[in-house]
Length: 189
Ligand code: 5GP
Picture 1 (tube, rainbow, N blue to C red):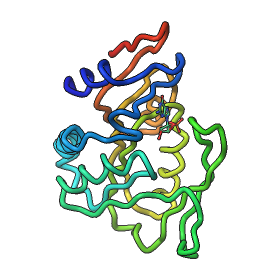
Picture 2 (picture 1 turned 135 degrees about the horizontal axis):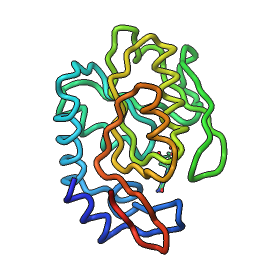
Picture 3 (picture 1 turned 30 degrees about the vertical axis):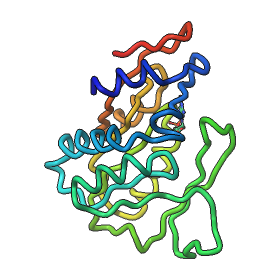
Picture 4 (picture 1 turned 90 degrees about the horizontal axis):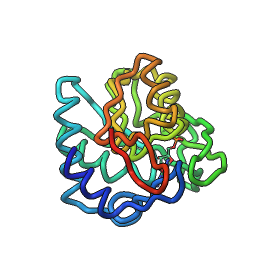
């Protein structure tokens, strides 16, 4: 997605050789027009897959997943990261390490919103080691639903996440692929 590459070059900040800050367009402030364009691209790529639900993890995946779900005319479900007073007792839970926070968090999805008959498109903002995606993939597998694929906005190809998920036989589509952040500069594939 050329428009996204351009925006990343203009607005992203390289924090370290591993981490790219995308607060200006994805992780803090969001640009609705750009997000809707992402939704259209993912909806086109997975349009033949008879998706019944789009899933993501709070919070940064929500805007993009919403845009995809709107295009595909299906509901969007986001996994919650914390138990709240209103958390359904009947939930699927998985423990995942958090790349940016350096801690372990529990993610959960109410069984009410994930059925064995569902065909799920999983959407996430950035993939690094793939722990967050693998956590939700385990929840989808346990529910008996079918995962049709994973769409990520930014794939950092120098980290193992997307590759290992593809090796599991899962289709992974990314909008931009970054091969390096070395020396403070962003290199696209
Ligand atoms: P993973 O579980 O694949 O290691 O990391 C995925 C999650 O960590 C993403 O949902 C994303 O929010 C966050 N993350 C991973 N790498 C980066 C990065 O370079 N920049 C930012 N802003 N977030 C990241």
